[in-house]
Image (cartoon, rainbow, N blue to C red; front, side):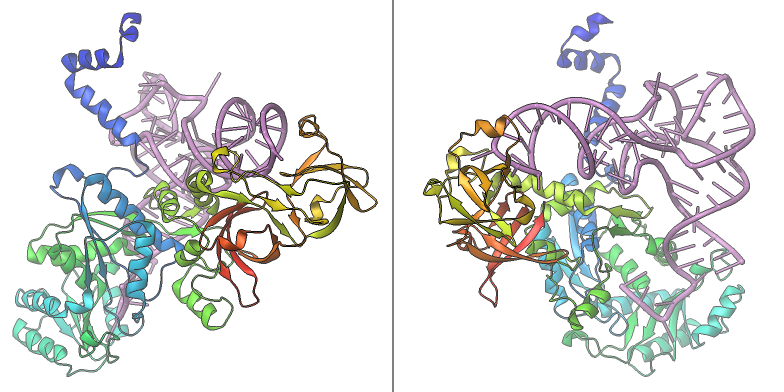
Length: 514
RNA sequence: GCUCCGAUAGUGUAGUCCGGCCAAUCAUAUUGCCCUCUCGAGGCAAUGACCGGGGUUCAAAUCCCCGUCGGAGCACCA
């Protein structure tokens, strides 16, 4: 045994290759698996190309929860060298009415996360295709027009009893369906149902609606003349097949969809794709409910300043704060794909982001609501703290010293105590002043002298920093105002993105995380 | 009411398919120590979980049954 263990990895591998090639394969497959957060896709090896779709409803910009779909699909695409498209499932012009700006906003959100779809489709461009397949289905006897009011059908269905329309001959059905397409019915008058199994033990699967009439025109000009719209289960089922989708990834709210769509697939003799379902994601740290319509309401009520307000749980807001899309993707793929509901801690996004940006992000001072303290005792004329403590080669900031500094009130020493102003030197607090002592950094190492950040009273830059919990104001060291669109770490305060100047002439910063 | 899912530390996750190497992995979080001119980074350590009850078995996080709890669907929403 010890002989075996003394051999090198390569030698052991070769020996095992000879003795038990199958076991070696298994061991190495498991090793590969360890490199990924996400589990392997089901039966991935059976497909020449893994093809997936991200099928959002374009009714607003994305919130953080939406990032899960592209994060996972995009990561799988990279892993399997596969393909994915964005398909806007915008087939409800009324209750989930598409927002024309959202199509592009969603593609931008996707780009922010670091993914570019291989193709983009809009279901509202493809109505004629859906009609074609519906006609075929009708000819096969797989669908029927039904003018029963919803409630009446529901009662029959729950009792396992068929609609009286169920046995219409296909020609009549086809005529009525053509009339639906021609817009000869009004909303609610008639629907096209897929004939499934009216006695199926799961009532959710019995004779579901494939097409219904909608009087409200679609907001897209290209689709505004259509009145007969497919339901998600029909549209999505047809499209998934036509696009050659091999793996469908979606939420548990669509758990029964696969079973419903399977009836259509059986009529057409198609193979249903592999399906992965996951639960809902909740994110801690936000007061605002993560829902597109709730956020939209808060914005129009003026409670939020826009989709990128730092208090809004949106991707636009995280981008504004300087959080990299990559950090969100890592946190999302770390959740895996379990079907139970999960809580994502913002701290895990922060941890990923900190790791990404810490090394590149220079340090600055920012004092929140500072107290002004005079300096005495001939301190140096300028302070020279390093831009980054781990990278001396980047050089130092030069901060001119005036006759007083601002300190955060929490950092105010008690009388007689010494503190070390970072990058400047040691001071003793006496008679409400800071008296320069000229002592070396050893006094900090010996203990008992706290190290604090500070800014000079004159020349410092007024700052408004927006955070998840509201705004924080204060003063930043000189020069910070030239860092527009850059990340900084305000030492002992946190990472922030410098944005620009606000309407009051203050520098606007967005807090990312500690 | 009918039908489907699911349950491992504060959070997420590995392990469950094919029972033993699991007094249970990793990350995050929290706390303490070391290092440091940051409450950042880095290092070390601690904290903390198999929903409950039965059964099968030499052996159960893993298989079976019954509960409990949670989620989802039963829309002319997606």
